[in-house]
Image 1 (cartoon, rainbow, N blue to C red):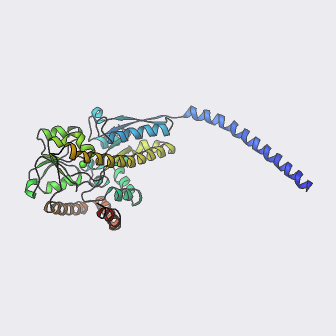
Image 2 (cartoon, rainbow, N blue to C red; image 1 turned 135 degrees about the horizontal axis):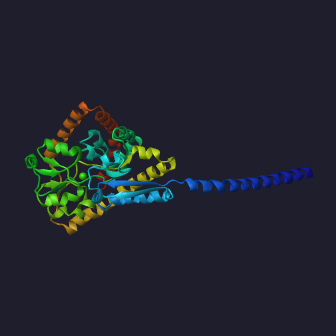
Image 3 (cartoon, helix red, strand yellow; image 1 turned 120 degrees about the vertical axis):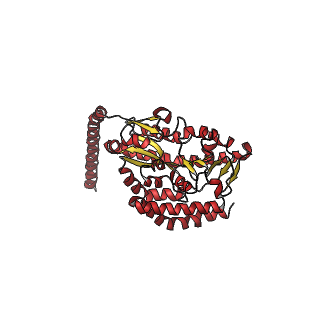
Length: 370
Ligand code: CA
């Protein structure tokens, strides 16, 4: 027994010595490493161009929040300065500027680049397409992110989801739209694939940057426009000049977009890449929640503050014509563009499983609990 006790004491002494040595060693090693790290700490000063004007609700605050989070989480190693459209004067030129390296980052909407590449539209939203929940699942688990990077590799950037508006309203119209004839010759601001569809139905389609929308509608440059939903539309004042507010069909889940210059991103150390990607993802989901909240609050205020606004839904005849044009255009574009077809096939295959689940879950619940 005594022998065992002696051995125990000896062992304890040994452990204590080893612990002391280890502590001493780690302190000795840490000190020079810390100062070495400080000496070589590199600061990355990046610039971000956004499509939105300064202090634009939700969209620009999401961008500001990413910049703040990244600066804090990186301990000041990655600093992002933001230029709004008021400064760079090229709200629809973000992709070009980030591709050229004039800016390391951008914040915009992917479907603004449809003129360069039709496949970019899938990463915002498609008419009669996925809901936000379905689309996030597709992006993160259904191959959407990989397809998005394939498309944007051709344009020198990485693309990341940048906040979702949820279902957008179908737009503000000066006059009620009762029949397909009412659409003929109508001048409307509506971007993305929806603009292509309405062109087929006789609408004169245009895209106008957000900062110029109210003036265009007020001066009659356009007869109608769609922007987002109550969260952002009422703030723009459209309800004062175009009282017919239609429910949506064209943008069921508009995802905004962070653009990152590929070379700049690849040059970042891995921990800064991880911080940036994590901050963008966190902000993306936060912006979606904020958008839903503000939509609900502002939609409720229409009834009390703007009783002259009439919320309408397009007739069955009009919606059927839109759907038919949508199918025709999708098939025609896919026939000439293998990348477009690959993304369309991916979304369609995924939706054969996702949509029945949406109907059996959210839709069934809502239908029975109105
Ligand atoms: Ca829109």
